Amino acid sequence: MNFNVKKINSEELIEWKNINKEFQFIDIRKNKPAINFHYSEIVIPYDEIQENISKLKKEIPVILACDVGEQSFFSAATLKNKYNFDNIYTLRGGINDLKKQLLL
Image (cartoon, rainbow, N blue to C red; front, side):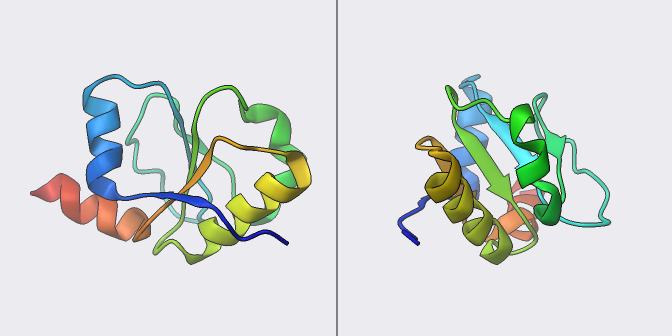
């Protein structure tokens, strides 16, 4: 499996949101409340990603986020390798880091 997955940090992601760059934000945490970070936010637990692949748009950046970035990294690698997602990112530091940045 190719583990060469693009990463985006919280600061870059917040900038994308502020300039209205189009992207999908996918919260893959299981049994956690949504953070309502972005209008296109979708909650799909990591173990349900493959059966919900039709909800993801390949033509715009897809950002996967978990608590700290580990599970989203492996999920992004799966989407890249198995489903040919080229525009897939994992959120470095995960939602925990994003929440810290949003409180600044």
